[in-house]
Length: 294
Image 1: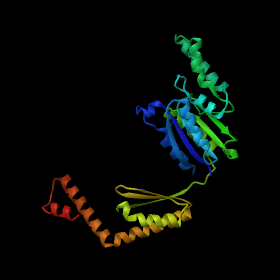
Image 2: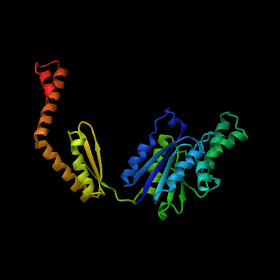
Image 3: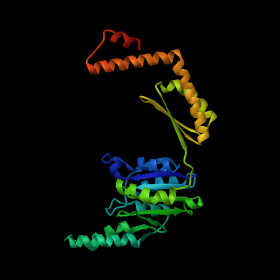
Image 4: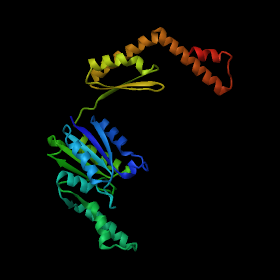
């Protein structure tokens, strides 16, 4: 089964100046393809930090895709290409497709009257220098580069594929959905079946039922999320998920029929009635007494 990890690169993320939008999107795309996201690293624009995170992910179970976001521009703090190359023991080489785009950008800058010196051009051309053996991934109408680097044959051979993508959310999203997903993710894992149940009880009331279900169906993932209503989410093979959901539903039905469940329902109904009365400006003399009983 293919698994995934992510390395988010950016001082601006760690400094709280920018909110990471890319890891939630990646999680959703992976989920749609039945691929689990093992972890997300958020690291500084520092080659040592990138190397540490990548080295850890290369040591995990395979096949695996490691997606990076950020650090692929032309400024001195854009270091992801060279950091990944160094971590993998590879040289940097100039990609002709990206190089042609960069040359066009340099020509435009010169036409606008910007001083395009040799040093200026060198920095911009850093965007075209990618780890040796990489495959370029592009999307229609996009400019920012993205590459795939296969380690020990990549995911096709049971190894690791590193997808180096830009950090700009729109560019990241386009390359992920138009290039990485169809080339690396599609068709590798079965898509899990998901069932959700809602209820109105404290999570602790269902703990024993959760333990029972998790022991009986160890391959089913169970998540409990408090709220109004609370949600129990189950995912895995359909037959097992349906059986697990049926057991949770039976426990909820037993709770609904119990004295404790009916008292809870009455108390909540009273609270809702009071809330409605407060909004309409109509209060009742029994409010304080009902609140105390609830």
